[in-house]
Image 1 (cartoon, rainbow, N blue to C red):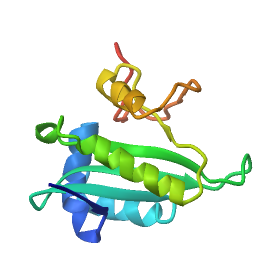
Image 2: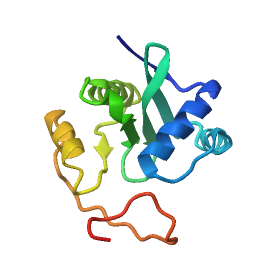
Image 3: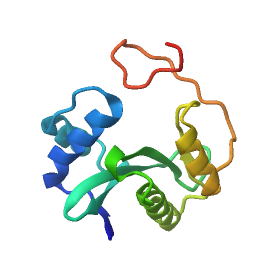
Length: 151
């Protein structure tokens, strides 16, 4: 049975391994601890535990902004380690973040993914997400975890 819970300080090692697996950029536990501290009250990360091991994580970004009275809610991270995929863990993480976004008063929730990530797109659509905009990004460094197809 999968246990979903808030991230704890002791999760830095597991999160650094998952993020390194996800981004292919080496990430240390110290970096994770710093990132968690910097993003406190903006990012609301949770982990999925199976048999006492962290096997996935997700994070809900909640930001107040000028456009609406309700906070902007975005799933800023979602990753399940490859051996644990296709077990409903990503769906459970997403559902929990939706509950939290609604509880915070958000009127909607956004998620971004690579255009060629067919598995993620299928999951998001199955959970009721619809295309509503085009996302563009300008990179300031060559050291980046995400690359468009063909780069």
